[in-house]
Image 1 (cartoon, rainbow, N blue to C red):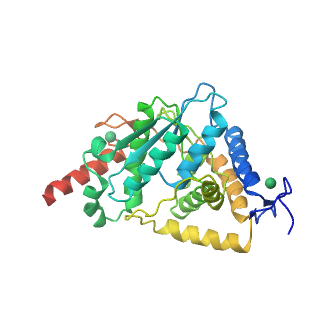
Image 2 (image 1 turned 90 degrees about the horizontal axis):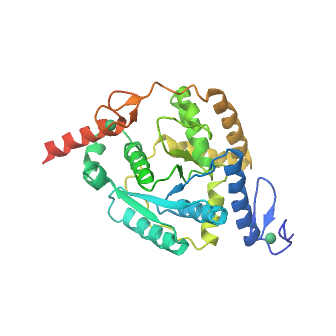
Image 3 (image 1 turned 30 degrees about the vertical axis):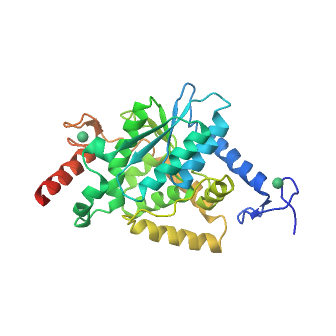
Length: 310
Ligand SMILES: [Zn+2]
Ligand SMILES: [Zn+2]
């Protein structure tokens, strides 16, 4: 068996799409280096930035935090962590414990905000409303989570939020936009897209890395893995797209990489076209494409339901 392609040592992983065999140390370095190149290629961090890493407490977000601290603390870039507690008993509690442990080991300031304090209800309390609706719990929860992360990041005085999205998340979202006929929203996927209405930029430093490799990095770095998955997980079309892409990759190693670069190519042509006229929500004042923002709309529906149930 040939040795590690970099150092000649005993290999522990073979990257199927490139044929490289890597030992654990060289594999981990390759992930750190790839992240650095992605951040630099898309100018994700700018001079004077204060970076908030959105930490769910899952292994991928904690791996991201670990990699960014390794890369940018020596360059004196301030890094903090922000988490959202949606209020899912048994599930998020465990994740937040992992997040606290890793943040304290890395000596990173950690801010947690909850749906309960921000919106007045936890996801558990809002849930039975959702079950009757034709909206997936993930998209419902995502609207609230996005706002919560923005608020936590603003509270932590961050100028940019780094999220854990991997190559697959990126390509899946691209394909789902096509399948939903949401071509106008493709511009939002541009890694350099910045909506001037939102003060905190969003970046995805893992967007060029396979999720399998992020998981392996987390494993080799002693990052805790969650034992339970979200009880409300219901991704519908996304999980079908994921399975399809995994099957394609198994038969054609590297095809996900090709899809990523094709997606970026298409996206760059739509960049800037998605800037709908942005106004302010009449209720909360946050940027919105309509009179009432998505958060306030969903919040009103949940409140109405909770009232009618009591
Ligand atoms: Zn090696
Ligand atoms: Zn609003």
